[in-house]
Image 1: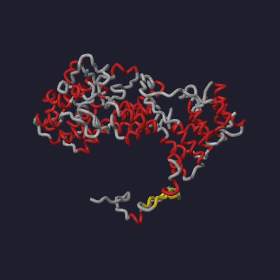
Image 2: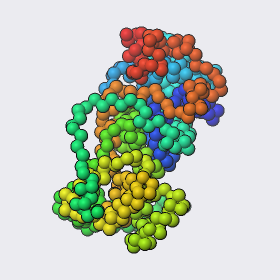
Image 3: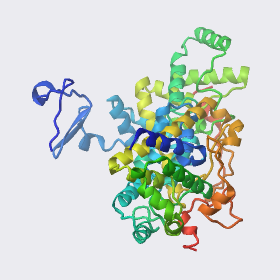
Image 4: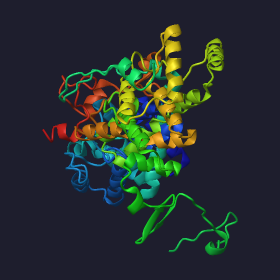
Length: 220
Length: 309
C-alpha cells in the first residue's frame, strides 16, 4: 500500500463522524489526568473487540483476500450469522454495529478512497461499491473495520500487517481525543450526567456512627 | 525456525556464559517446588488470603495478620460496581464490546493511573501523610505554610464532596481487628479537623488509606504496587453486567465534546456533509428511529435490514 493510500485512509478514519466508543473510552481513560499511555492501552483493548475491532478486521480481510469477484460468493461469505465466540446474533465481520449516520459516512469514505486509488489497487473496493446495495441486505452496513479490510485487501496486506495498520489507524485519533479531554479536565467532563437506572434490589440504608468509631479507635 | 538471543551488537550470546538474570522474589521449580521470598508457596503461603499474599509478594515481609485483614477490608469497601465511575466506564465499554477480560481489566487499571482520582492521587496522598511532621508545633507551621502557598493537600477535599462513607468502614475494620489508630492516622485526623474548622474541607478515604499504610510500615513504592488491584472488583462487576447486555449498547453512539465544537462534531473535517438522504440510502430505518433517538441503534444493522425484517 502506498503511503498516500494509508494517509488517506487514516484521514477518513479520523473524521469525528466515525468516532466510536473506542474514542470515547480513550477520553474517559485520560480525563482524570492519566498519561496518554492509558488511552493507548484503552483504545488498543477496545479496538481488539471481536465485533468491530481487530478480530472482525482479520476475519473480513481473510475472506476478502480469497473471495472471487463474483456476487453470489460475496453474498454468501458476508452474510450475517451468529458470532461463533460471542454468540451475538447476526454478525458479519466488517459490517453492522454502526449507526445509520456512520454507515453513510463509511460509504462516503469508501467512495472517496475508490476515486483516489489507482486501478490496480481498488478492485475489491470497487466491486463492493458496485454491488453494495445487493450485498448490504445480507451483511449489514459496511463499518470502519470493513472499510479498512477492503482497502488492505486491495493492497495485498497479510493479516498481521492488516492488524497492525488497523490498530495504528484507530488508536491515533483516540489519542488526540484523549489528550483534548485531559486538557479540559474532569471538572468539565459530564460524568454522572446520564440517567442511571439501577435494575437490582436495594437493602435498607444503614449508617455507622463515625464519631463513636473515632472514639473507639482512639481518635478523640 | 529457532530463535536465538543476541547481544546489542547482534552477536549470538552464549547464554550460560554471558547472560544472567538475578532475582530475589522467588523461583518456580516446576513440578517440584515454588519459593516466594524464601517460603514454600504451597506449604507456607496458602493460608494467607489473596490480599495478604499480594502484600507479601510486594514487600517480601509477612504482615501482621490483623493488618492484612484491615487492608483486605479496605479493598472490599472500595469495590464500587457503579458504571458511572470513570474507570468502571472503561470496563463497561469493554464488556459491551465483548473485549477479552484480560485486555478489559488492563485498560481499566491503566485508566485508574490518574491524577484527580486513582493511583497518582493515592501516591500524592501518601506523600502528604508522610510529609506531615509529628511534633505539633512543627506540624502547625507545616500546615500554615501549606495554606499560605494555597497548596492542594491530597487526601482532603476534592474530589469527594461531603462525607466519604468508606472512612467509617475503615475505622470499623480497624476496630474489628482489635487495633487502635496509629500515629499517622492520628495526624491524618488532626489535619481533617483543622481543615474542616478553617476551610470546611473534609478528608477523603485516600488520606486514611495512606495513613494506615504508613502505620503498618508499608513504604511508598510498596504502597503503589500493592494498591493496584483494589478497584478491580468494581471493574469486574461492571464488565460482567455490560457483557450480558446487547452488544455495543453501553452509552451507545455518544461522544463527549467540548461545547464549542459541537457544531462540527458530526461533520467531516473538509466540510463534506453527511446528508440525511445519504443516510437513508446506506442504511434504511423506520422514520421514527432516527440516529439520534434510537436507543438500540447499535444492534447489528443486518438484524434490522429490510432483508432480515
